[in-house]
Length: 305
Length: 305
Image 1 (cartoon, each protein chain N blue to C red):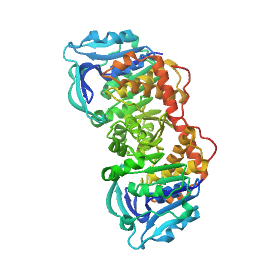
Image 2: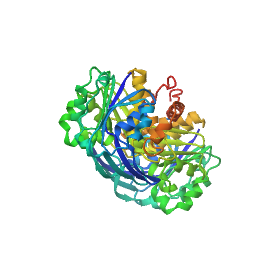
Image 3: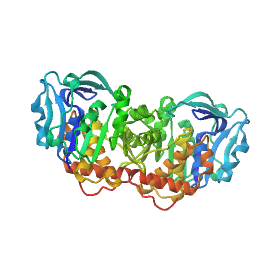
Image 4: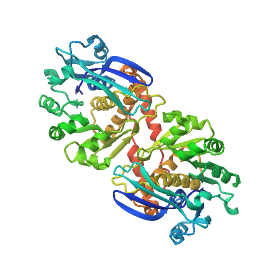
């Protein structure tokens, strides 16, 4: 099934305790699409400025990512500069320059309008709503968001929630959006507002998937070395949505598998800067990591205690 | 199999966003033994002062907890006063009065010396070592510790590590002890110092069990209401050790089950103040929660991706 992502395509400069990378590929749509491309073809909608090193996007095309929706605008590209300290838990943003992204108005090429699986990455909820108006009859629409939009665009975000099937957000954002400290209550609050599925990401502490009937929990993979956490959330979403689009099965069992594939992709991307690791990861690597996840959490209930 | 715990028996005064409790039963040995008593008989070694409301310990006897090793000393009992804020993540200690606990020298009654499963709760590692000298030939010795001992008694703690089969500690303590930010590396560091098994507790983010050959992860149960987090770690340890002592099976599969039983007990204790919930929890409740844990993490790997 066709998978569409709308989001940012950026140039990141990142500093971690292990090294430094300047002007490398970044942005939510970039991470998402490369991650998802290991499962299915991806249509990308975003914008880059006249300074963007477009030749660096060639590997994306080779992975089957359709860049027909990537607008080339006059001006500077979106740039993010950040630093991770020793614990790697949270990025310290040193600089954000929105550039052409600040005037981004997503326009879907006609052939993208029939997309069946849609991921609205973290952009202004007004734009996320505009994307939905351009789409025919999607089978599953998922969105991401962030603290900035929860604060500044609450009304639009609440409107968006009525039109999406699934939302991914991190635990802090879930608490901020719902004003509930307890994550189970926060998830219920969101489920009451529209989405049938809520994915709450907890970074190194894994992710919860809540539906009305069930809770599923996937740990983050216990890596011995995390190199650069940038893009883990979008790579998670890419693996998750990519798997769903490929298998076209929205049962609870399949959603659980999709969460694990997403977790696997999130665990790969942090092993190197930018999308590097996602470019050379293989289906075998992914299958092996899914099996590792299975071993990690498996237990036999045995006899009643 | 016989299970022995050596640790504190205290009076706690706790304030949470949901209420207040004064001079209620607390202490590591108390939580541990009540939790473990749902699995097997428990021998407790500890000390209380002349002010201790010993009639409040009657329910423990009814649960099969042998208090022959509970010393009654002249002086004040160990008292802890703490407060949890809205997020319930960490206790703010308002007051600690060690009282008779500061002169505690564990003395095992002769009939306790043949204990096969031993839990050295969080006390001075010098005392933990003294306990081991009084024990014949245990099948499994586990210990807990805390930041205070890691800082002030590192040498004794390192000596203790040579003599225990298993250590439980929280993630911050593991990082402090090993000076490794990464938990997998921290666990390896500890495994090199003696213990065959390392249990790293992450509070609301679950627990890891590391051995040389495998990693197991158990989430914390996603409760809709956490009432009072006090004693969760010791109740976890009690369920874990109690299950091992009852089943007397140290295979990896059974250790995994034990972690889940421990996690279940940790999830019950936080539903009320003090040991209240642990007193009325039933074997059926425990089995149901173990099944809930199974549903929470289960996924079918399906076909290769």
